[in-house]
Amino acid sequence: MDNSADVDREVKELETKIINHEAYGKPYKWSPRDFELGTPLGQGKFGHVHAAKEKRTGLIVAIKTLFKSQITHSRCERQVLREIEIQSHLKHPNILRLLTWFHDERRIYLVIEYASGGELYRHLTNSPKGRFPEYKAARYIYQVADAVDYCHRHHVIHRDIKPENILVSYRGDLKLADFGWSVHAPSEKRKTMCGTLDYLPPEMIKREVYDVSVDHWCIGVLLYEFLVGKPPFESNEQDQTYAKILAVALKFPPHVKDGARDLISKLLRQSSQERLSLEGVKNHYWMQQFVKIID
Image (cartoon, rainbow, N blue to C red; front, side, top):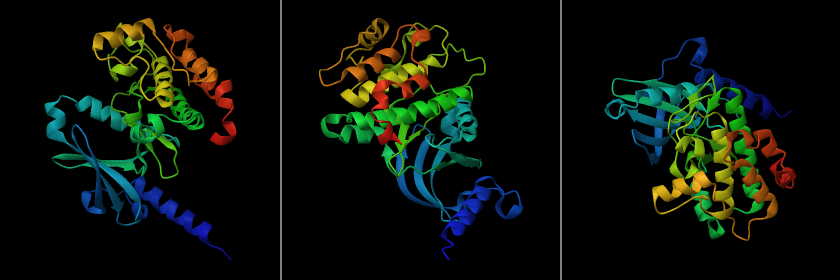
């Protein structure tokens, strides 16, 4: 009799207990000694990221080490705490899981789901002609839209969706990451300027009150970049980029097909109220061509 399913379930239960600080039925206090650090994965503003193995289960994770002195020097305490608070409560197959976190006198350690495929941006730039084929762009946008829709249903606005903030799992699925600019907004109305220049929606540039539809705009920019290889309003000067965004000066190269143009145009609307819903994105006729591939 094959007991592999039972073994897998037992391992998963043990991993869950450890993740939930309930190792062996007792509250568990984590420390760096619980992990064996491996390959460096990247360098951030406040620290570094390594692949690591949890010694008790052998679970492969990523550990993001943040230095408190750098955080306080940059006056980003609230941003870091917000990222921890928000990401620890989000559980979706296309959102990078924050499994647990702990700290000592000098550092904060974030134990994160390991996405072995790395940054989506690298996959995009390494693709032929620096862009994705339609089927792959549609599959990825479906996953991003589903993840962002989940965030919005939990009153979270991401505000910084871009290829650099999306990772790829070993199965090739996307993992929305980097919630440093995200905000838990029960009122769903904000006025803070944030995010990445090429992805800013008009209402942010005009410093108007905005809502979850800023993420809808970003998904439109993301799809354009997937299919073209660069953002739609990219310019050499910041003022030129702002002007193009405010005018929604959208131009498509000949290879972008009508269905994709229609979807992008319905997301990149001057009026936030006119932008296509995320359910509408997933059910758009251009996306539906690739539903079987997506599934």
